[in-house]
Amino acid sequence: MVDVLVVGAGPVGLTMAAELARHGVRCRIVDRLEKPSPYCRAIGVTPRTLEVWDDMGIAREMIDAGLWIEGLRSIIHGHPPNDAHQDLSDLPYSQLGLPQYETERLLARHLGRFGITVERGTGLHSLQQDEKGISARLERLDGGTENATFRYVIGCDGAHSTVRHALGIAFEGEAMPMTFMLGDVHVAWDLPRGMALRALRLVDNAAPDMFVAIPLPEPGRYRVSMIAPSELAQSGGSDHGIQSEARGPGLGDIQAVADSLIPDKPRLSDLRWSSMFRISMRLAAQYRRGRAFLAGDAAHIHPPTGGQGMNTGIQDAYNLAWKLALVLGGAASEKLLDSYEAERRPVGADVVARTRAANESHGRDAKPDRLADTQVRISYNGTAWIQDDAGPVDAGPVAGDRAPDSTGLRRQGVGFPVRLFDVLRGTEHVLLVHLGREEAPDLAAFTRKISSRSRIPLRIVGIVQEEGVNEQAGIALYRDVENSVAHTYGSVAAAFLIRPDGYIGWRGKSYRDAGLVTYLDRISG
Image 1: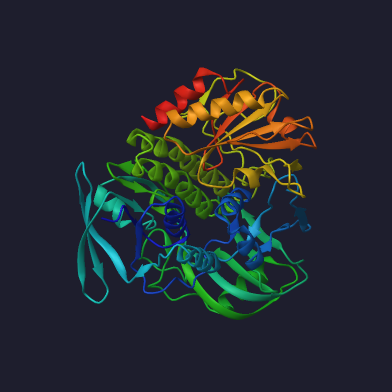
Image 2: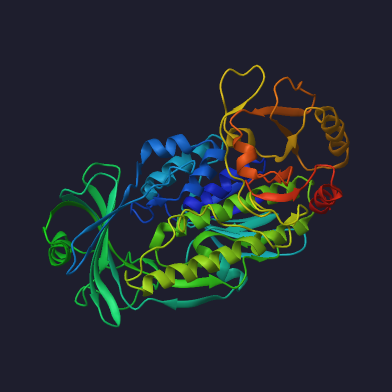
């Protein structure tokens, strides 16, 4: 029996399947579409998603296929244009622009390296579950059917999720009243490469007239969006996503909006595709029911403001995959799976609320926080499966926070410096310990003890300041030459247990704290 069925092969489903495979889980992935969608829906890739791809080993491929989003030119009717440049140089990665069809192509190629291909033209018809597994009925476009049994099913099948409907999970919220137009066009103007553009004509007590252009990697090409005029908007159709049954706008329709809102009236040409699009704001009442889970648009949909949707879904998958792998491998209690909804649903709720508020402000409010949409500040602190035994400290990340990167680490026998992210990359938990000169042998003895007790895959990494500390069996020792780790992680908490998804699960003043063993015992059950 294959362990997991992933339903849906968009960016979220492909990430889920690839991460399950990387963690050693057997899975299948199906999608109703015979071929990937050609539409460029999601473009923006957040710095946190690039960190996820770094861990997966595909960040370079994604960066090479995309372009960096350098900033935003705002044109508000009656005011001079304003260019706001984005400086994220203090983060490992900046904001990337990558068309969704390229994201899916590269994720599918990555998945293929594990020997897994998407079963296209195959959709989920129904499912039934009991305490042992899930029986799923699959239907193919050629009329064939299959009954298969899985231990878990994950619905990554979008806003109209068959999995969510089969589970009877409520998807409460509302649709925005207007219809949008999308298009992929060439624009002749002086906008610098990598800059996005937003042109608005504000209207009292109503949505503004708008024209938004997001740059694509090919020079001069943009994915443009705007509110459709009433004569083009049609009734019927779905309340979220591409309106495939409706005729897309023509080049003249899009040019008319640009001429109305952009003073220089740039010439648009070479319309490769266009569509009508609708937006809803909804959040699933549950992310899990028994052995079935929801991720991505199946769990949360909202306006595209800040490029949060696809990225939030990818991080849903990144959060769940390692937990399922530990449970399926017998290393963790099934109760660990409760942490998925506890951690990710509040993130989904926050994204829905923030994007809704930003959309309702109609561009009147400036964004006060440059890191607001980077997703590096997401934290699970205070949730049930996070434990902090260090007490209050003045600096450094707390349990539940993303483990930040550090630079300039040196290891004996290695002729070049490495980043902390290079050290953390992999599928195990990592116990990161600040060590004094005489502590390395004691940590080595502790390593042997904890390895005999816990079934959780665990690596021990020691960070030292002084030269001449000898390597110890079972420990990877790195010297913090630039004092980067000490500065970033603070001086009070000396031990951090970092989960496979890069978040701090436990923090303490010493690796000897009883809380560490208690935490590992709780995960393993």
